[in-house]
Image (cartoon, rainbow, N blue to C red; front, side):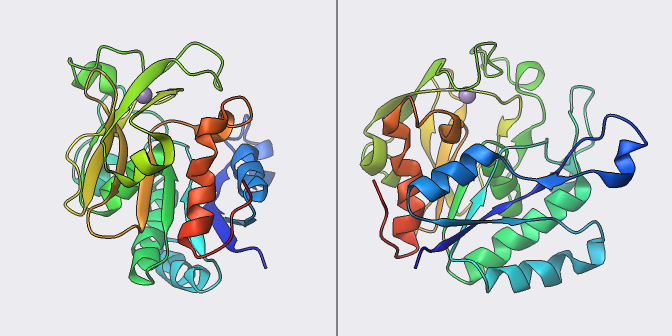
Length: 249
Ligand code: MN
């Protein structure tokens, strides 16, 4: 049996009020493909648009899946880390954030593993008590690298240094060349997390749990890279292994 690897959904941004009446819930298909490639069974979880049931759905979903992937997506609403939005904030969806925060907490309580990608690492950090740069270029003068790359999205554009001895280093070694499509980033790191990769300008590019192997998160998009850059695939086989499954490699 393939382990069930859930990934959270987003709602399509509707181009018009007419289409808005019938818009789609969806998740990145390249993450789905990567999960299938490494031997998992992907399952997409839509967020409820009724705040009152976020918690209940999160609890019920956790009983169904073995591991959780948090995909890239919109900005995180700064309300969740007690800040007002700045001018350079992008689209945020309060209900999606609220559901993912409930799901992250329920998943960790159930001792099931998480792999977070891009926005995923950000919502994960916020769920566990950390904060974000709402907009890296305007809020962090030390961030001199272009983290919103202009190159095609699957193409690596900056390097990351990975902490020797970390779980991430056991998967990829101590450096990697990665893509970068983010304008938000981890600022204050949540107490239970440790930074295990940084860009040359100091921007946080990976975190993992301090005291267990339950959490791994990266700021880049390995799902867009692995078919051309196979050194990225172990990030996906890793979550299948962490749920106790046998990964296809
Ligand atoms: Mn980056």
